[in-house]
Image (cartoon, rainbow, N blue to C red):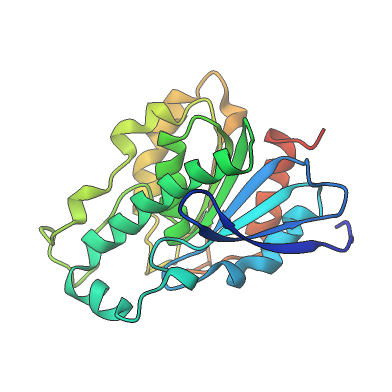
Length: 241
């Protein structure tokens, strides 16, 4: 892996003042824009090392705080989610996708990449459907649909609000790499496995632009191999010129 010193800057970006970190190697400010989106209860700082790893390859990496997270986290965060978890979770996903569109405008780019972890993976799937300027996306330990847990009633309010599989055709021709652990009990791989035949059919004439990797002995975690595959995917499908 290349080793260069990275600059890290804090911005309050866009018309809504979205808190973000931007990291890049000096001289690479004009490199391809890549977003790295954190998970539930997390914040932008948590994934900075991963972001810097991507930036080492010449990318301009932006890590936003999701809605209601990080610097945007309200004092009553726990109560907000305890009272109506799935509806609030989907609100965060949808709002943060709107933020990503706003941030692409703010940084003045015609194309971008996006990787997201856990809740950030849900955000990545929805953004892949809604934002045409995204050219390469990597949902990591996320899901294209909400699934009930073992103790969750199937009719729990909000569960039916998030399912991008029926809109999968809008993802094509973006390059999409999906990374999940087979032993993940928090975000089970069932959703990505349901979506797999749909995407394989949609990408049958461009198979190099879709890949699902299921890690046999991995739970709800981001492994070194996942990180390296993410970097390699951007290098292949959103190359630094």
